[in-house]
Image (cartoon, rainbow, N blue to C red; front, side, top):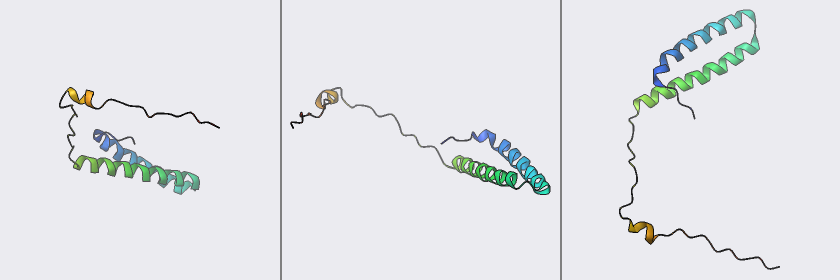
Length: 89
């Protein structure tokens, strides 16, 4: 899933205003298909904006980098492949 850069929240607000204006014109002109498309776009835009605002309120979590504790760990757990038996018919 692509995330919106929080710096672009103001731009999303501008896009919403423009879409609302376009929807008003589409209603005046009787463009039913255009109204439906604009409504879908507004729904997705608002969802992305709300998700971006929600992510801003959530603190980030440091997961750290996993590390081996000893070099011997590599020797103790060698990689094995399962044995394959030929099928006899």
